Length: 471
Image 1 (tube, rainbow, N blue to C red):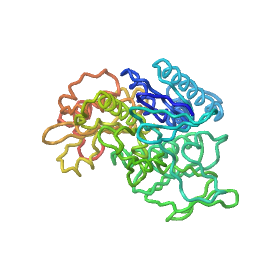
Image 2 (tube, one colour):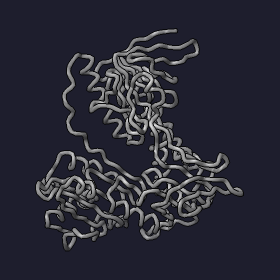
Image 3 (cartoon, rainbow, N blue to C red):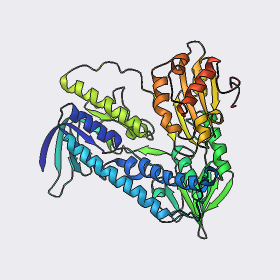
Image 4 (spheres, rainbow, N blue to C red):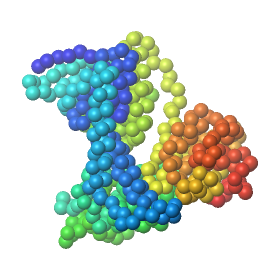
């Protein structure tokens, strides 16, 4: 048994974990990162990156099918699912190699193995020549989450949201269970590639954490594209029957060749309570405002804290945890954390959906008097030029302070407006301050400005302030 001493040990090499490791090294700490599988975690290897690569392939196919309206004639076009997967695999491999080089460049020591906590300052990692003992002044847990499962017959063709990205061939029909971002994206992807898709969600609407109008607009778009959407439908069991898979719901049975379960994720927190780390009722790790667990030298970030969160949210938490560790090691007290930053939520379908800040419902539940305005993309020169006029920008402001509370977008390339929208909301800009930022013309960024102008009551490219439903 060998022993090594470190300032910081990070367990888990996903976005939150490698961010913590790099930031700790940049502060001069000697850092060990332990990863049981591949660097990059679920996001890089089985989630965000391969799914977005495949979604891009599907969008290229969608563009080719509609190319004639732009004067581009493409004859005998077809797509190859196996080549799409090769593209996604190349993207993942390239980014993984880049991450390996990045960690090496920063001086982070990487060790492969299944780390096990052994007290407040010690972990154990199995090795070929016996168990290694690593001690540290602080430990960061970034072990992520795993897909939640649904009751099913062991012979039924049921895949998790991760496994669905690696299908060897496309089936004729799929039922996607779960109307969150992952389920909606998978439904759009396979529908675009010609698979008959039914999307089932237990709650009254898809994308329940997004603004209701954006969610409803995307639902309508999905149905127009051919996806059958069933909301308010609870799945009880999935069974196998004569070569097919049957989804048993409280509204009847749905039969398909394949079922994809995308009902959420659960934190990888097994064994943590045994060393005194407090867990929330859903199994996620309880932390304070500095990501510190009930064991003061152990911090937790990412999906381990949320069960199902965002990569960018986890990376932000990693930055916060390292700041706390630096103060802890130097003996400085931890000051109150500033307000939680605004974390954007996106869905990479076509059209895309973006939610930043408070939704209209959330603002009203807080007792705020709000003003709401919308700008339809069909009035945008940039959207019209690219033939992408579906959707709208929705702006929400406090009627008294005129502070922008939320920006919600349904439309092409909405995801890439997240930086602007987040900055406006997080910096607590007033409507007038945000509207007076000069944007390029023509650009989609102007849509944000137009919605803000409509809030002021001075719309430019629409004839009235659309404050009662979408224009």
